Image (cartoon, rainbow, N blue to C red; front, side, top):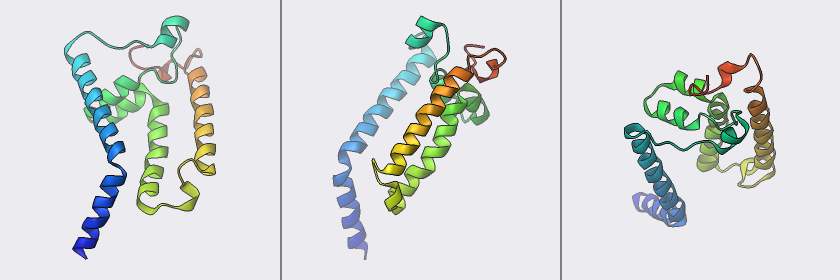
Length: 144
């Protein structure tokens, strides 16, 4: 039984080696950027916000991730409510896909495409809503 599990693990590792390597590189770049913004005044700016003076749906993601790293979940949600909602939606779905492989949740399947379109529409609406007067509470802390 143990050798069978070991063989399955080896097969999984070989099949997904490229994805794990890519994830490791992205995590390394993210950690390097985290250290850079923590110890220097450098940070990436939002091109959309620079041009339009409006907050895009993604404004606040860096602060969101930094607050998550500090285990400040309420603060992270305040930085970008949309990202928090998307994580709560896609996280369990990804877990379900990896563990149980349901037919209705196949990669690039109909359900996933419909859900992705809905998420894009919701992000666009969030981007409009957060820039309306009286909705300043939806802006990231750096823009309030």
